[in-house]
Image (cartoon, rainbow, N blue to C red; front, side, top):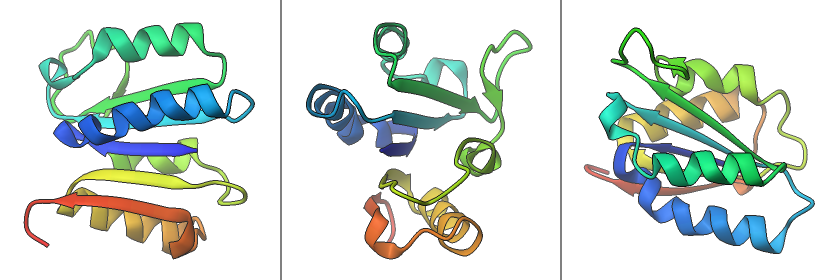
Length: 128
């Protein structure tokens, strides 16, 4: 189960992550979270704690304008997806964030990584 969020798009996915970790302890759960600045890393302590305490939860965070000491990825969500997702097989993706990120991510998942529309669930905000 892969969650992809940008900015405040993390809010609706947060509870879903907890539920998946509780209901499906045998499944790998990944969060790819894109932010602009380090101060935008909402729920930082919480997600880092989840990653430490749950072997099946993997946290990927990328920032477009990080400091020199930023310990995670640099760039946009779409820049790191192909390094993280190697196959569409047996995967579901939940995406929430601004329309531009969702559109770019959908294009990448469907055209390059061969996901079907039935594997992808989205929550848009902003202009449709």
